[in-house]
Length: 145
Image (cartoon, rainbow, N blue to C red):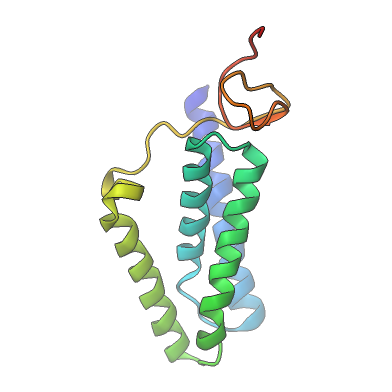
């Protein structure tokens, strides 16, 4: 059953990415190839914060906020481009972010990735951390203190 649940989760993630591509290309007509870079930025941000023991909702919002801020900063110069030039610029952005993720061994562990990301739990006290007692990112069960 956990394999099926894992497949459903990946299906939902890739569905969100497909819907974002549809919004960018279908509604605006701008051919953007770099939106996956912002997905990766948000994912690494939330995973690294979860390793530090931050609450799940804080990790989720921080990843979205960081990806949005970087997207805004990258969008300022690149959204003035049109057609093939925008596609080439965003393709270069996606590839450069991928290169950073693959080569920054101290932070992202490169191509090995980040194993052991804590499972998100909501409304469960976290016995190992003082920051949050209500929303946690640790997969542990509550214990008496």
